[in-house]
Length: 137
Image (tube, rainbow, N blue to C red; front, side, top):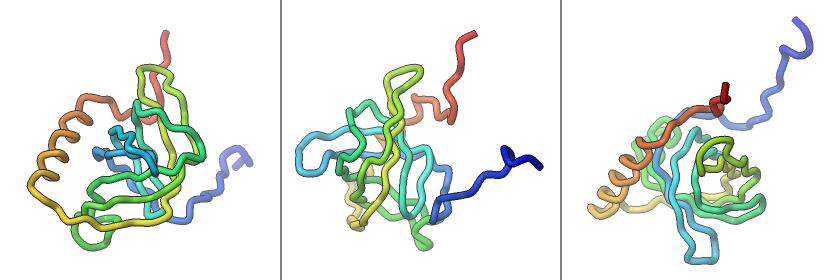
């Protein structure tokens, strides 16, 4: 085995491949957007959005955390974190945004929240969830 084949895993928490709708808000402002996750862990998230963000931005993400992460039932959560990386889109308008999560707030689920979640799910389903952009021939 060559050294090129060996990679160290630097993540402190297990990462789960979940494509979930997410609401994004720039902390301290009323600017909001939406997107969809590619993966989640207890300490971070990678999501795609056309909402403009930059490394270092403080953000709030609102989503339904799956039971695999909460170790209980699915829970609606508002997460506070900082953007650590923004990858510009190769194709389309959605940037990949990596966020280090610093805190959580569990939220009650209301009927209007369920409808908003369904709307985001429908929107998320319209966008491809490829990990790597396709390359033109």
